[in-house]
Image (tube, rainbow, N blue to C red; front, side, top):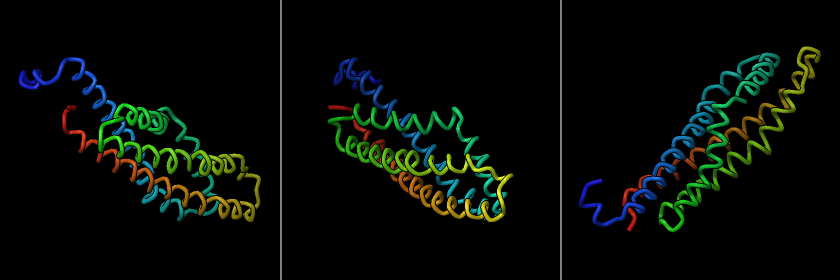
Length: 181
């Protein structure tokens, strides 16, 4: 920090300010990663999968659903669910940043995390239990019909809410530019 700024703030205030800023930036990165994942999936992967035969589609979704359960995904998905509320707490009393973060947290926990846990995961589990190899063509077709449209709708909801979340976090970052008084 420049000496002039040091006269206005004591060292403990600066360290707290820097810590909250680091939390905000990490939260922004993780939120952006999740928003990007769902956005890319919605505008590319879903479209490609939609062109596959019923059996190919179900096999591909089973594979994707198994492979996404990895540490990198969990770090960003769960990390956002933890860091958004924590960062919001750290910014309590800081307006308008706190309000943006509070709204981002609500959007993420309800529209992304909640929809995933209550909607997409049960569908993924249902699909994972389905034995494609020992099923008739009609059973495969019915499974796809009961899975695909609902899963895609839920994914679009997650996409919209994750984009809303990152926009709100970016707003908090923009209005975080002033040093605390």
